[in-house]
Image (cartoon, rainbow, N blue to C red; front, side, top):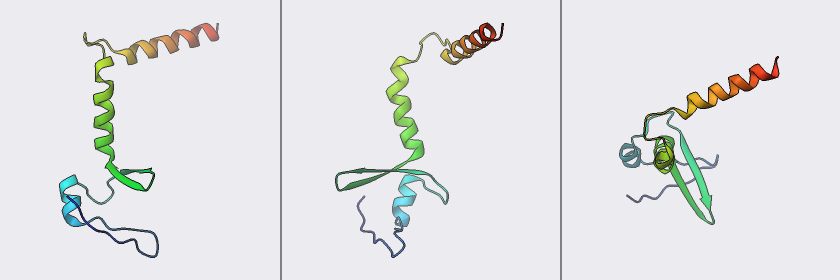
Length: 84
């Protein structure tokens, strides 16, 4: 979808209703604004999170092992050694 939008005097722009509908945006939805050269890209936060999860998925343990639990245990052991 392509649309033309106009920047107002306060630097705001309005996303057309059709674009908001396609993206599933509601009032208060968070977007990431990226600028590369003269190109501006808006990405819904949930899409950015989904992409990050897809990138990291190959590194997730396949056996259901929780690396978070490992990290917490490691930090607790470190804290226990520190306060002895």
